[in-house]
Image (cartoon, rainbow, N blue to C red; front, side):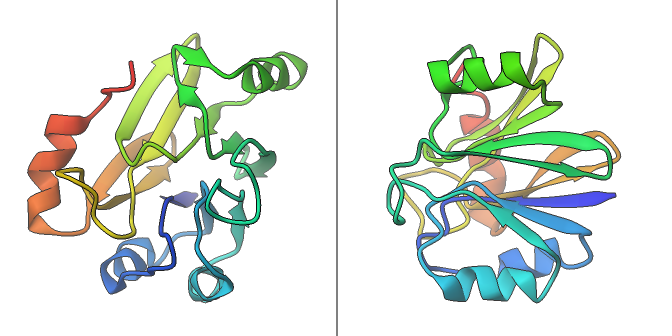
Length: 165
């Protein structure tokens, strides 16, 4: 089961993101979608589960749960840090465990396992900020990876990975 992970599109659905997510079985969007047209474009590829970000109609603190191919996902926009998640995330994980916490907001790539839970931020797939990467993520049979959407983002993924620790 291949799960596509995207965040912080801010109204921009890049053709490179569409191509990188082609063939996935499901897509999760970790907020700051930026419009129904982005979700419609993603739904043309696979079923989509999303959470609103602070630049959508929400405040970025909602939690959405989904299980895809047996993988229990907690989806939120603002975490903010894997080693010090917001109380609402901690309480939610205590009440109902998850295998992976997918988050956005920071535009920084992250992939770290803490106490048996993977914390994954695909970075932003929307407009470029600073020297941050533009990328999406894939989880395929338990393996997680970031996919750079342009040449410049390959080095930025390496440079910026796991800075939220």
